[in-house]
Image (cartoon, rainbow, N blue to C red; front, top):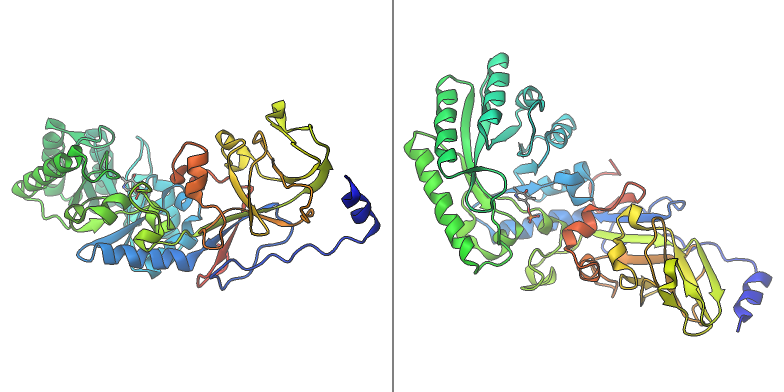
Length: 412
Ligand SMILES: *Cc1c(COP(=O)(O)O)cnc(C)c1O
């Protein structure tokens, strides 16, 4: 039946629902014209960092804020992490490290993934620590430092078995020797030896123990060569939470500071005392009736079972909603759970609300959040899209407005 149409046509539309402050937040809601808003609870980031410090009480904490803080926003997250006791910040790329420093962040900053020609001089002038994993890198860093008449702080990266970045086997010995030469020339100061796990999310995996042995041997080798190391570091979020023997002097959690579990098979965020910081919402662009048997969205992957109302949500794969979550991605509307109806499109998704739904254009849809109000979580989206929660939050696109809550500052 289609009485709803006669009803809405004959009545004035109510004002759009006021955007509500997200749970636990103290900030202001986003501007009402935005089709999609990610609320970032900075108080949660600060609290998560405190929780992680309690998991690793003997170590300093480097908050990994690469990739725009996993999609949450580089500067607000960096400040919230420092407020929670992070004494270091880390980014993969140099540009983000420079942005941090140029915006007044005074914590130690480490950056580790750079290509030839990167602005090493800019990094050294800003007292940003640099990873050295290959001879070319060491040469360029030392040359930049020599030109500036100073010493660059470097962390030698050893590949202990991830088979990714870092110097492997005899290459590490050669890198260490070259770095010591540069140190004697006054161009570098070797402050750290570091590495990264392949199976940190499986703490009992035999490679974990093996990588730690290789790491400890590399540290001994550096110390025997005369290095006065300030920090030895190996642990990402999973190792910070599950493997105290890998904490050494500094832990480098990323995902967990955003309140997501790096080991969902072992425990969810709550089990580790973490609270997801991001809540992704959107507002219906359209809610309309469709008859039974009507296909919905491309290729009609979803067909209405009965006369119904469908809601059109203006976010799609351009915004980071995975197309693999077609017909599976979970949503909440007015506290009720639904799944995406049919295909995820570039700019939009649909939901089959049922004939009785009172939803209207402008009403809020929650795609994911902490889960405390029954809404889905980023981890549930990860399962729906056959991926990891890292990818769900990090891929959120620039069309999604970020609104910061619970921090000591407004939007950046
Ligand atoms: C991304 C990254 C981290 C953080 O990893 P999480 O699993 O998000 O905690 C730590 N160290 C390095 C080298 C990284 O690239």
